[in-house]
Length: 120
Image (tube, rainbow, N blue to C red):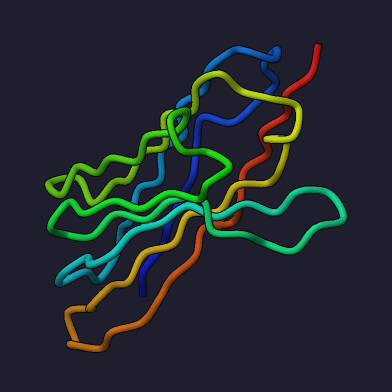
């Protein structure tokens, strides 16, 4: 059993910053790639950023230069630093992690989602 819990969302003004966190816990042997996705109103879920266990990172074009994904392997936690936020960044943000459990079963696990609203 693996759980992912997100935190750090909320309401912020345009141009502001937020930092999202997502901690994985449970029967974890190893955490591989971790990622953030988002679902904006009336839109499909889209991948925002990914980070491998080797610290290779990729970003959606819409967030490059504004968002930074990092991870703390000792804490099985991934972060998303969001700067210069725009109203179009308003969405429910989801983290996911590719995890090998203690039973040596590998699956992708998702958090419950957290709301980010950018508005004046």
